[in-house]
Image (tube, rainbow, N blue to C red; front, side):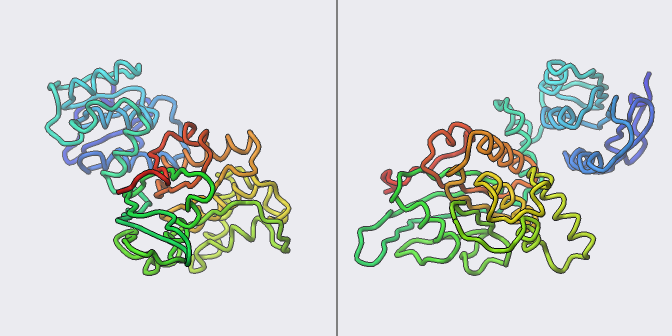
Length: 343
């Protein structure tokens, strides 16, 4: 019997080994020990070539997380049949003390018909309240500029914390106007906007990160590093500020642009730097206005990859407004089309 298969010590619900070396323990319940393991592994510098876990209980949710974190062997005290099937299908060596048809928990039932592992991960993070995003609730929204026909009437949509939405519509359908309403820059003719159960102008500073179209030809003596630094929390120690700026630039593949004038960058480079700024800002709601405008194919691919990464890491709520129908297919998110009947 390998060490990871030996009985758990009293009070422990999870033990993690690399080979025969114990590297992590936890006393929590449900999936919290596994999310704590994920956080631990992000800074753990030791070997991770043969991760083995002994878990007190595991359903499909735990199995998905363990595979995502690099587990290769698992011994479970109480395991469900869907979990065993998943372990075996993914080539994870699995043993157990007792197997049952299904764990008696809502999470197990929720994942019964879901196979997309990224979506499972997002669902589990939301249920564990590990989501940076805020809820958005738009109800009966109407708006018209003076002496003009309404751009939209009786518009409804809602997003949970960490939700994702593409707002489609041809030019002139009110996409940018809708962003300005969400930002609190315009007042609706009727209806309500609630973000984190507040009106837009009542939100704490830094809640919303807005990335506008990158077509401006303005020129100011400001570097990409300075643009990102403007968003970092000034109350943090200087060392922490520097770390967050550097991390944001590296995550968005913008570190090499740090010293360059922001306004001399290409559209795709500005998009990446702007996303780095929102990372430093720790924005809970991201609003992107026509993000693929003026982007070449490589920059477009990079942007889509960065958005996908955000939806699995920090999980802010993200709203993209665009008339780019290809982006709809590339992201695969929920879609709201302006111009449709919203009655």
